[in-house]
Length: 165
Image 1 (spheres, one colour):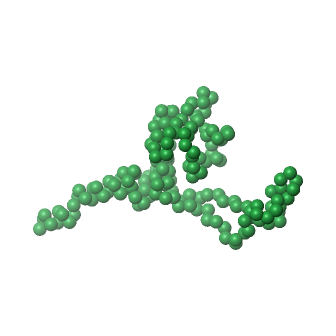
Image 2 (cartoon, one colour):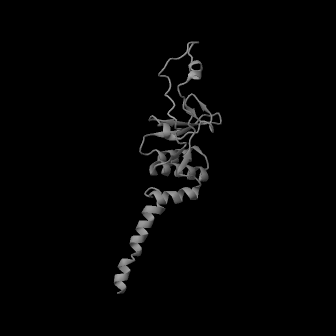
Image 3 (cartoon, helix red, strand yellow):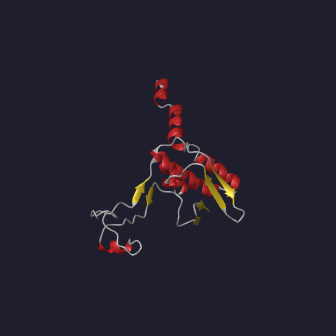
């Protein structure tokens, strides 16, 4: 009877499931990532600013090029619905956000540590590294085209011709 109970309540199986589904951030699933997000202080739900242009009479003059009003097909008609300003991150995107926040919490901000983190974060995309601009600035160089959802905050960090500081 004890052997049957031991098989039903296998501590090994529970430990393996716990480690892969919750503890290890590389293999954590939705619930585990939500726990990690609370630990490091980031939410899966992000508020994004969406200010779409709609076709209307004012836009004719606002979008004028060289003093000439713009015709139709410049902006879409207003559909009566505002797009949602809250976005729920997928598990992979949330995992990257958690790792980035954890890195910002524990880093010493030296170039070797930033390069180590960038290698870990973008290991599946290609080469990316940080260089010293010798003017109190760090430059991040991508040897692959970065995607729009990469997450550089334009309102937080100054940008100069594609160079992120």
